[in-house]
Length: 519
Image (cartoon, rainbow, N blue to C red; front, side, top):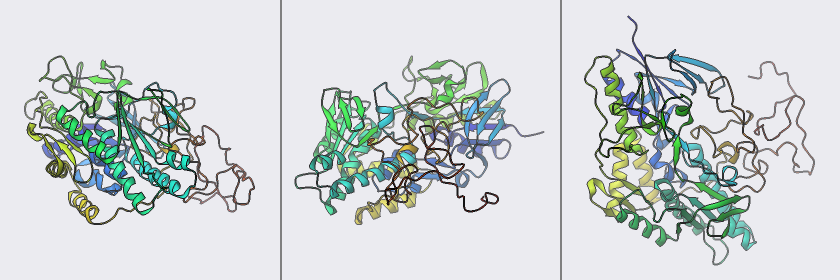
């Protein structure tokens, strides 16, 4: 008799935890398959430290094959899910299609950047949901400070050294807190014009920083930010984004080249494509994390609307803490569906929250005890080390080195503005050079989706905040159709498509040798 197959879509907090517990419970009696675009689990809470140069990118990534040896990893993005045929259609990293049949399906696709109908934001802002976005922001901030230090124009210097973060929740608060320390450290060695310093602005329409947390934690975070010089503006947001800056809802125009979008998240569009009952974009499930009418389908994490049994009539919030715990319950209930144990309803107990504010500062309330300063910083870092499923020693080593050595403020130029568009269903994957704009698989899994007009991800707009033209960047050849060093215009070689809004910059095919054997 063949083993039953359990397919898990997504390797975020919920998906990873489900696979981890299932592999221990099944003990080889079931085939566990994980479908994910990358081969790692990303520990999102530490992503701001990657953008600030504290941690190296690999420190916040945990190898799936290395830590889940009993789980088969399939690299790809889920497209169409045929619930009646029990099949998941996906697109692999090189564009190839594939199909996975299942006996049990776990939808743990997570979430993507939340968009608002504000003019210019999709074109000129960048999110903060994946490793490529963090790497881009680190390079971009470093570049702006270096260019600001080299210019003699006070207005241009101020524009490049102004960084606007929208959203004062967990992510936005930590990005602004770490960002101010990062840029201050840079200008200490590379001073700006007299009287100038980097300026970080944190915006939110809420009345206070961290509105979802206890008011005392909010006051602590607010005080730390203002003490460092962060311009905290509550009750204010962006009315319009332009290539030269942002227009705020209070009427002020801020000259800037950087707009970081941290207003929140929305469920992955995959959940909505199933045609099942939804709750604000999240797939409705019962307290046992099963989809009503589809007992073979489970959902957890940000993609699922899980009833909050502690607060009847509401649903659990989209946080990593809930996703991790739901993954454990989901694994036990899948095992119970095969006759191994009893089903469990998801219930949670608030253990508190931690917010890392950089340096030795943090805000935390473990088990309801409010902490600030060094004590909160120690608890916060201890919590992260305990929660990470791997790389603990390496993360601790990077923290130690950061405490005694200056940070390496260099731009590697590996991630471009056009490769991390805000409006994307795959923030964990940078857009691939040379592929069409709509390189994200369509819901049908048959190939690239039709790109929306003016959707970011094509060639970067001129003077776009947060995005620079391809030419004159480290490691780049002059862009096709642009003047080279001698003032001439480079034409694409025969067979190479003309660059345009639907073709991302890509490698130029050589014509001085036969194409046969190029691979």
